[in-house]
Image 1 (cartoon, protein in one colour):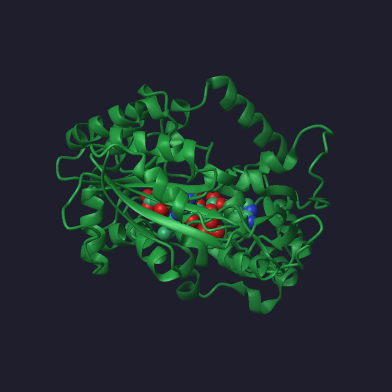
Image 2 (cartoon, protein in one colour):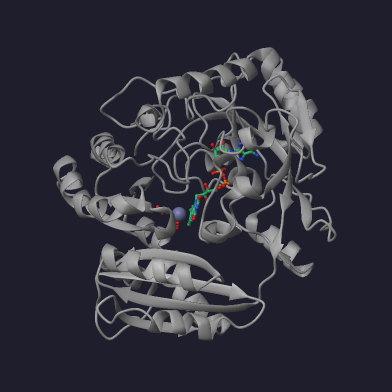
Length: 477
Ligand code: FAD
Ligand code: 2HG
Ligand code: ZN
């Protein structure tokens, strides 16, 4: 489907945007703007009239004030690693890039907190706080590009939710620019502050529909340098859940429990050249990581020993940095390996652990009925019942396959979005996970803060009418 033609900026707006961010940071050359118009997966495309790259909160506020006056829509983009089309501009919107909001203040050691700009990448934050003897509670494979603003806006999860919770749980304060250009700023980082609505929590997970996050006050985690990682083979979901329960009960140092299956391993090995982890192939695999101030290896080995031989089919443990990274690579390379095989339809769902086995068993048939040529790769964060349902060879059946999978998930009391957000890809299925009353409440909040729906149009709430051709605006390839 061809993306809609860019609409021209309202008269005078160009001048105001130039005045707000400076000549060098108003980008209008189509060949440069184009690099902001396609998402990480290559599935979603859109059109921006221009790109603005503000340097600080005041410049973001000046951009929004000008846009609000002209009633121009604004799409927000951080690292553009989001997987639901939310960072892609639609209908000639102004694309606001947070790439220059990169101020990292010194770590406040007494409180174990830091204030950081929304455009700081996760990896840059990790380097900064680790140098001060701290760590950050959220981590995932897109760390080199994903920004703190994008993580907050999507309430990103990742590999350590088991121990530290999602991004929302790390946020102690927020600064943001609202649709009318006004600024809210609460960065004192008080862990106790019960004075009405929790604005920071509300903005976390709002996917850029309530405000543009410019700075964050973050809770830090202890820097745990003693680590051990196990890659364990199991017979399937039942075995994986038994092993998870043992690991959780016996290992207070458990930080991650990640799942992948035989098909995913084969694809990862094909695309990365990694060797087979075990002599035999197995149906399913878990990566377990323990971290502490003292070496957790013996505890991890003892927990694995405690598992029955019919549950734990094989295992390998690494304690040195290189070995640990290799074991993680089997899991973390899934997203890139899938993209190297084609443009996927990506669904990110969660069900109660008691329903996980049934869901995994039902998915192949459900998907084959909707998209007969589809190739399914499943993996995810098992402790949260969070499955990444990646479907290759199905972009021409994206609507049908999404509909089928999300209804199946809803029938298992699950969520249509565990951690990636709703974006533009899944807004028309929001009702499967939220009641009419909840959706009305969300709409009322949005309407109150952004009555003209200028910020991130069609993300999360503004579902277009159903079509046969995938999410409109952010078009299916
Ligand atoms: P973008 O993609 O630029 O934007 C995402 C959304 O946030 C958009 O709606 C955008 O408009 C909005 N937004 C961005 N910045 C702001 C801001 N400052 N203020 C308001 N709104 C804003 N996600 C997980 O949760 N867990 C994972 O384990 C995980 N692993 C990944 C691995 C890979 C290889 C890749 C490619 C992606 C992965 N993701 C994961 C998805 C993605 O990285 C996260 O959603 C991340 O939080 C997005 O950050 P970003 O800066 O790239 O945001
Ligand atoms: C992960 O857990 C990310 O690796 C990406 O959330 C998931 O590629 C995906 O579907
Ligand atoms: Zn994930």
